[in-house]
Each structure stands twice: as structure tokens, then as C-alpha cells.
Length: 396
Image 1 (spheres, helix red, strand yellow):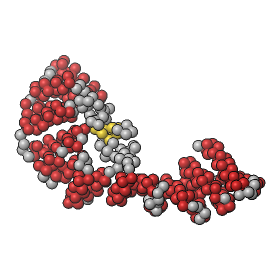
Image 2 (cartoon, one colour):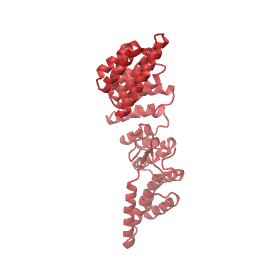
Image 3 (cartoon, rainbow, N blue to C red):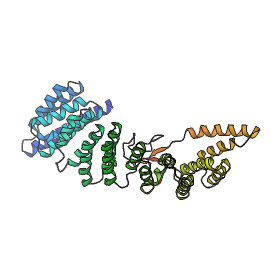
Image 4 (cartoon, rainbow, N blue to C red):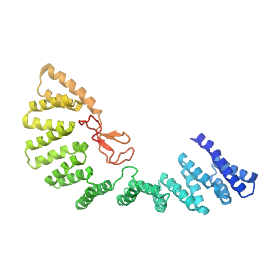
């Protein structure tokens, strides 16, 4: 990186010198001469010797005499930022702005680059002020809004993020799939953690009104209602997930079974629903949930028969693992010993499986994140399923 920087600095110097030369020639003053070249080289030497203050003073004097080197100075500051020398980048960009010789476009560009310097330095409050002053600029407004949105999300200022998202949505596509509904869900999560249930409910109602396809809002609402003992309302919210995104059905199966039990609903009704989900979507999670319910209500034999059909239609390690577990309860002697070894081997194979994968960057894990920890895209972490389409990444 150091060698690369040193190679680019002379290029920046040359571009600045030629710009100045052309500037003077156009004004009929001929070659800017030895004095200009010496001053520019002196500034570069100061930079290479890490005498930043002297270098900035030298370049500042050139800036005062020739405004056509402004882009070169901005590029030099950007180079330092990419290199990681954030203090130098900030000094160069601040100096440009303070000199007061910039036109409107140049000032906006220098301010935007300074905002990026602050952002990279972790000075979020300063960056917010800079970008906030640029949101109405015709050329930099959208980019400034995007940077503000990143800051608000990092600082968990969800209401500011909502306002920023609405403005960006009017300008076009959002950079990382941000949505008002997700930020409302974040506010609901915070309220739930603080036991402000009524406030959480209000945020979730707003999220559901904002985006009727927001799975997260219904899952949170169901969790709230179950905690309050309102299992009928929880069941209603859970069953709405199917229409929103069938890939997330596996997220509702366990709470749905709890709701059926607490409401004393017929086991046959629950098995009917699980059977419907499996037959409609071929979801492994629904097949396994139905097997567990069949074992409880009708014994191992019926559960084994069901899993045999599942394996023929949609073979998978998890289903095979469930089958060996049931067979272990049926077999004795040498067959049992062989099944134990097989079951242990399948357990090891299943241990490496992941439950969720990001559809944007491929990041995978066993915890559902509504915002990918790797690429920071929202609602990109999808359950890894085995539906009828044969896809292992859910229903797209």
C-alpha cells in the first residue's frame, strides 16, 4: 500500500502542475515557471517526510494562487483516507473548505469527502452534521442521505432512520433493502425488552400497516400475545406468515404447536395443518413436526410410515436422522447396535448443516438475523429449506 501511494503522488502532482500550466497559458501568462514546480515538489516532499502541517501550508498557498488544483487536493485527501491516514485526509479537506476559494460544486464535494473522513474515523456526530447540510444539494443529496441512513442504523436511531428511509424511497431504490417496517420492528423490540408492551404493540401495528408482507412483525406480535396468554390472537398472527412468505413457515411451527396445546384444540386439527403445509410446500420442518405429533398421538409405527414416504419424496439427512431415532425404539440386539452407529454418524453430518443463508452475500449461520451481519442487507437471511422446487435457500 505504501509503494502504491508513492507511485500515485507524482501523478497527482503532475496533474496539478499541468492544470496550473494550462490555466496560466490560457490567461496569456506562459509557463508558470520554476517557482510553481518547486512549490509543488516541496509540498510533496513534506508529505513523504510526514511533515503534514508544512505540506498543507504549501499546498494551501498553491490553492490560493490557482483554483484548478482543487480536484487534485481532494483526490489527495481521498488517497490518504483509503490508505488509513484519516488525520491527514481530514486536514486536507478541512483546509480546502476553510480557504473559501471554492465554488458551490467544489465546496459540496469537499464537504462530502470530509463527511466520509469523519465517518471512517468514527466521528459520527460530525459526519451527521456534514451530511445533514448536503441533503438538499442536487448533486450530493442522495449520497448524503445514504450516508446518514448508515449512521442512524449504526447508532440505532430508528426514528431518524425511518425519516431518512422515506426520503430515499422517494428518490429510488434503497441501498441495502432498508424499510420503514423493519425499523418499526426494531423500535418494538426495544420496547419489548423494556417491558413497554403497549408501546411495542403500537409499533408493530404501524409496521404491519406499512408493509403487509412483514413476517417479522407477525412473529413479534405472536410472541407478545403468547407471553400475555392471548393464544388465539397469537395463532392468528402465526398463520398469516404463510401468505407473506412460505419460506418462514418453519419459524412458526413450534409456537403454533404451543398455541394449539394451550387452546386445547384437537390434535387431529394440528396434524391436519402440518400435513397441509408439508403437502403444499414439501417443507422438511413440517414433515418432522408431523412425525413427532404422529408418534405422540398414534405411536411409532404411524410416524415411521410417514417418514418413509417423506424420504422417498424428499430425502434428507434430518429426515433420515429422525427415522433412525424412531427405529432405535423398535429394534433390539445386533440391529439396534448398527442403528446406534448409523444414528451417531448422521448426527455428526447434521451438526455441520446451517439453518440460514444470506441471499445477497452467502453468509450462513444458525441464528435468524433480520439484517445480515456480513453485507448488512435487510431481510436477506433466509431459512435454508428443501421445498418442492428443490431449492435449498427457501422460496424466492
